[in-house]
Image (cartoon, rainbow, N blue to C red; front, side):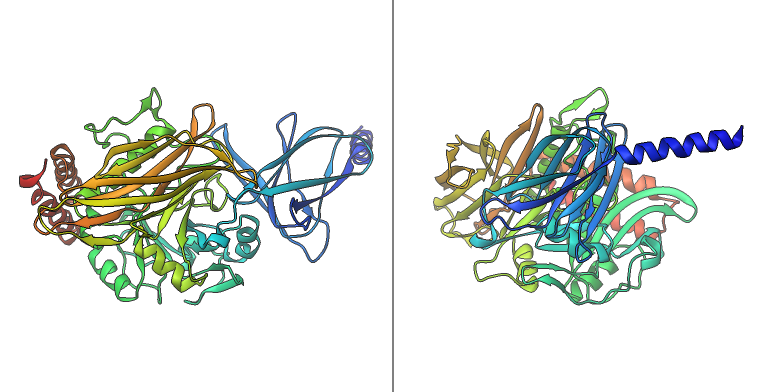
Length: 537
């Protein structure tokens, strides 16, 4: 009986193999006809995913398979610039090809029978940002270093900062072994994939969730562009900040709602704020209940019966960024995906930095730190203020009105639905998008607006595009600053009261768990926020 069952099983496998057919294909640039690196997704009508391989030995195909819940699913391969092949059983399949933000995705539905087939997916470049001096990056990367040459080219991501050192236990220094034993040893040297695609491999994530053996979540902060691994654990965090800044590294806040985030900003002098963070994905929004209880109730954050909506989470981040700017903490915007951990492609949210003199890693990091940038999950928002890059600070005389002349464009391959000008955290102007068709298949909405301002102000822009029903893609620029001596931007009183309350809550929560040095850092942040209350508006 066993022998008969085995023969029957082998017969079934043999028949299935005979019915399978080889699909061979290539992904090309529509203008040149040349094969290009790209991301490829293959899904059957039954919902199963299939992973192609490179059709030649010289090529590479890296499989990516991550899922959260039942609907937040990302399954694809990233392909080098070579043909691909895949074995498929007869049936209907959706074949989709992507390459970063500057190509229009290509999709085909095909019927597989029992004979080999060929397919060509043609990607149309709707905009060439590098040709205009803009270069993209992802500052929260969990991919293996050895994967990055393939994945960065497939996603056309110019800069990647993989977090190769990590720690989750308080007081312990970070190490490679804590993160992933598959990570190769790295040096503090940029690695050039090609002249405009570079990754810098020495970066650290402090993500403290354990104090001793007790689960006690503090949160995450990144040290980017290090010269050497830091020997200290966290908390306290102030020594980390001093050592990092001495190396020329930048501190990235990660998410705004971690329990310790609002303490980190004044105590560590944090450099970067992720306006697109690792909860914003191509696939369905998942982390609806991420630290909901301590959200600011003075803000109108969209929620549903399960917690945050995707738009609610996005605008929550915007509003907390504006609050920090109004308090005088001039963090520069960035974007990170945590690709490698979550179901999201590398660079889905990315930051573009303006380098009119051409690309280099060092200049890109300097431009990121200077705020010559915008963050995007799809649209391109390139704007100057008074004919200079954003991020600049202008000194203005007392009691004199002044002008901020904004010029640029919001562009995408789908219609822009809204362009908004933000002044000191409020929507000051709404610009109606023109969505003029371009020769390359994009839609262009020019921006030319003169703002008359008085007293100190910061100005930024954001735009939105409804990508599918109920979901949007956005772009958000860095601010430009206008300083009038003796008249700083004043935060709102409810915002300052919220910051004070959060520090008081964290002091109470950490006492008896972390040591007194750590608790004193919350007290230091508390005093910084209390000092803003007398002049709050």
